[in-house]
Amino acid sequence: MSRFFTSSAARSPRGDPVGTVFPGISGRRKNRPDGARWTGGCVVTEELRMSLDQIRQEMPAAMRWIYMNTGTTGPLPERAMRAVEKQTAAEVDRGRIDPELHQRVSELKETLRRAWAELTGATTASIALTQNTTEGIGLALAGLDWQAGDEVITTNLEHSGVIMPLYLLASRKGVQIRFIDLGVGEKNMIAALEQAVTSRTRMIAFSHVSYQTGAVLPMERVASWARERGLWTLVDGAQGVGALPLNLKQTGVDFYAMPGQKWLCGPEGCGALYIAEDRLEQVQPTLVGWAGLKQMGPWPEVVLHQDARKFEVASFSAPLFAGMLESLRFGEDVGWTGIYRRTHRLAARFRSLLGEVPGVQVVTPDNHAGLVSFEVQGRKPEEVLERLRSRGILMRIIPRTPWVRASLGFFNSEEDVDRAVEGVAEWP
Image 1 (cartoon, rainbow, N blue to C red):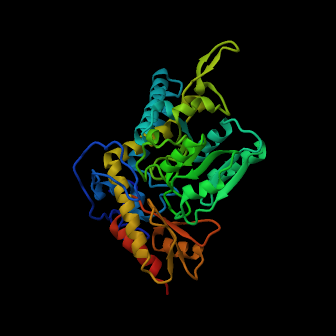
Image 2: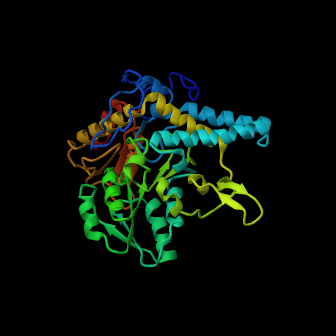
Image 3: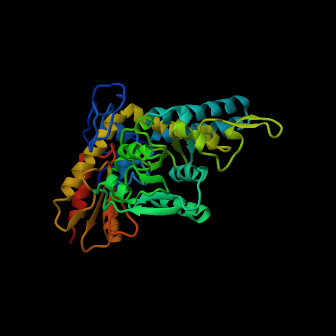
């Protein structure tokens, strides 16, 4: 029993006793295979390394609720909470200027960088530590050399974390933003790009997975198409990292911005930006500080790091970094390839069952990962959301649409899926 709960008789809002767990999957422990790829489904070779019982015991929120909003913020594992507490306690007890503690904090930062690199198939030189996805997108956009009249092509499926930095770029630099219509993500993106590209196009900016519809966009094909034409690619990886296998170095993408708090179930305020090593010289820091310095001397003897560290400015939260590292280690213990497979399988189950409910329109196309969006015809999405919440089911709505979105995580049970479908279907 988690120490969050004081009584084994306590009950969750969905009516289950707190601490209830469901049968899970176990499998042989293997190393994560290299080159795992997305092909419309996850090509993986192993199941989870921990039982669903063990996983859910680590994640009290996943037992308290039918937790289907990981695409906003995933449930935090208890081990991550303990790491935050331990680091905070050390800072209180020893003081943050303690030389030994200061050295350990510096090592923590580099250990976290290596963990991000290993997870995403990148080199440590290509990983800058950030606070969130939007910061990474802003760093990439602001650091490139733009001229008035240059064009960026983006899609109709983007989050404000892409759109707002693009609008700022347009207002400051005179860059033109062009939109292609991909429907809900089912349309041919390469064909749309062929129609939209001009001699002034410099970049393609798009989501790996659309936060609106859950569609997985063809990132590798777009990156290859763009490189053949000398164009940059900037990818919003908010709904990709932790839900799909990544090997960023092999994809050919130039910039991939990531959060820690969603599918990786880490603390908020932790993220990373991947910058392809052959693009590092083309991007300049927007802000500079001691964290980006390789050498500091009398002006002009100031030398920045030549790798992605040059984008890091100054102080960071060591407790949050400690928690993020533990969340990544938790994912490794569970087994990333098993996580990817189970995430997709549960989302496919939910999508299929929901499609059989009269009056429900499933928005998400076949090419999906862990997100499933839907509309209950004749009902406002706020009404649907509140009804589900009253039954202990957490989802979210997509602004300016009639859609409700569910996020299916590896910690969800098959019974979670069935109850969520029932919650949507049982209207008076």
